[in-house]
Picture 1: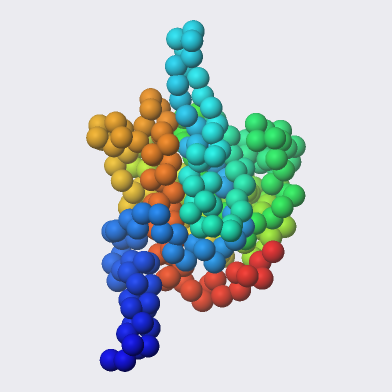
Picture 2 (picture 1 turned 90 degrees about the vertical axis):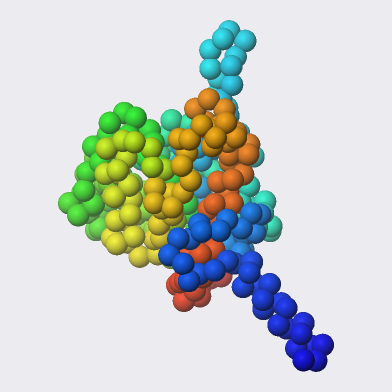
Length: 272
């Protein structure tokens, strides 16, 4: 084998190794730490979510009560953008957010802790939606995507988790019809409400085009173990290492999705 052929062979081999093995069903069979893979073809990201999307850190205040700080620079979204290099990303997120609340706080009447950012102003190529924890906490009706979504007019969606979650996707599609969406199921923490909401999140990929599922309930780590909590959490929220790990998980998963659906992302450069 001549030198040039050796170089080509090595480059191809390194590329295949960098994106992992795609023969397995489990997209997280091997976490490729710090390697964004195919995520680099997306240059403009939007991150929709609650405290766990906001890099929120929990601490004890001087009065002995708990304090909460949305630290966007440490959020998994910003850690992703840093790893991708040359990309931009905005956090449309804040602690305590719900699907219905997001519509009001970031779309209809922007009033939020992220400088009152308006999600309508600067459309992105791709969005990651990670909502549901707070909806479950306040026992929002999970609803049913088959009955709660009006595809002609999102204002007529039912006031349920399914209806409002779909309404977020529909609103963004109204300004960026070809945007790609990565919807995230909640980790497998024991809750009947979360189980139903996760089923609804998965169904968004059946109802709408360009929607892909990051299924943490099925493939993510066990967030409830003492070992995981001791390393990656401080009280009820993740620490800096936890958000970094989540960024690696999301990049690995999205890399896997794109690799298996390359034809779906052929025009991503024209989504502006």
